[in-house]
Image (cartoon, rainbow, N blue to C red; front, side, top):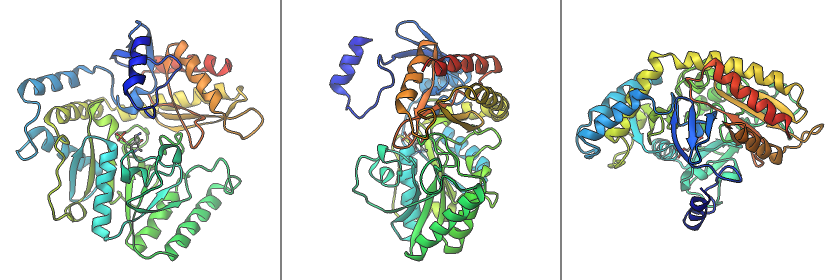
Length: 426
Ligand code: PMP
């Protein structure tokens, strides 16, 4: 392992962050568990940053992938592709977007990039509204709409981005406001921004900010935004890369928790749908999707092998009601973690929806973010055989829990016990 770490450092850029003082080489997985090269077994509460949606090495997905790989791995999007059409049909139906068209990409970044291409093309404007503290990917355009500047390595931009309030409310001028006052203030901020501009293309938002530390705006904020945007003809892009496919428990898509006005104009997805295979994509009404009048294909987006994974994975998710499981098991886990946190002074808040739970750490007795504590808990959990993630705004002080959606009650209990010990050890 050490040898591999040295080799990694010699050839991989410094900005590709690795978790842990002694980084882990994961060699295989099964269900909700993974093993490292030293033979240690871990309960996986992060699922490769939410990419393992159903379970590791799910036989149904493995079979679909190997059968498709045995037939043909790739030809070209210039030819008809059965698994791609099949997955597009299912996603179009699930999206709730009328007359939906689906375009597949290989990542969330490329999905958001495509959404920007559509929104700017459709509205003939390169002005985009984005949320403070957001994360939307790593391409030139995606970092330009990423409000979390710890993840935005350039100030140069192909877009004119205006950042809107409405994400984190922990600190700063809005911290003391009630939900209703916060919504009022954010909507006033949005109206004010729009009063000084005249051709904004779209607003992009995550229903739950993922990298930003699993924070949700209060219910009603996005619905209120939507009303303002609709009045101006501005498109709504919901980045469902982390929140899609039932992860938030009560809803299949994250936007449904916020906006009862109906589906977004453009929806982007990635991560879990391929259960680890590189599948991302964009859904939009035909009128928006077809606004491009030049060719635009993705050589690997929609590849038959990754599409076969998506079809099998989605079928499993729906047949086994993993959204319901996320709601039930996630609800229990949230309550259990809140119970633990009540006697751990470093925990400021335990929050979440379904199997997307954040534990925010502060220096006890203060409101000051504590990234060192988060790093220490991450290490201690690993020693206890549990993998979790971390995130947050400019300082990484939120522990992130996002296991595969098939998590059992017993596993939730086991992971919570390890987390309890890890939290008490700091
Ligand atoms: N949007 C959101 C909300 C994300 O969390 C991520 C990845 N963390 C992305 C976009 C980018 O996805 P990818 O890493 O697949 O490019």
